[in-house]
Image 1 (cartoon, rainbow, N blue to C red):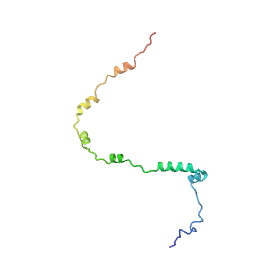
Image 2: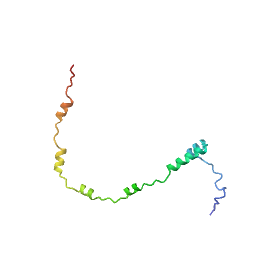
Image 3: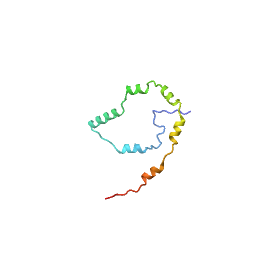
Image 4: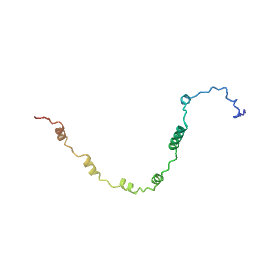
Length: 108
C-alpha cells in the first residue's frame, strides 16, 4: 500500500489546475479598498451574517396548541340538506341575461 505525505507537494503536482468560471471572474476583478471602505464592508458583512434571536418568535412557535376547537369544528354535525338546498337552488338566469343584454340608448 502506498502512503502519501500530504505535506510534501510532489503528489499530484503534475496535474493541470482547472479553475471554475466563478473563480476566473473573482480573479479578474480585484478590489482595492480604502480602510474606510473595508470598515464599511466589514460592518455590512457582520450585519448580514449576525445571529438573530427573537425570543417572542420562539415563544410563539413553541407554544402549546389546543386542537379541541379544531376537532369540534371538523367533527360537528352538518345538515347536508341545507347545504344542498343552498348550492342547488334555481337561479333565474333570464333576469341576469335581460339586464346585461338590454339595449342602451342615449338621448340628447
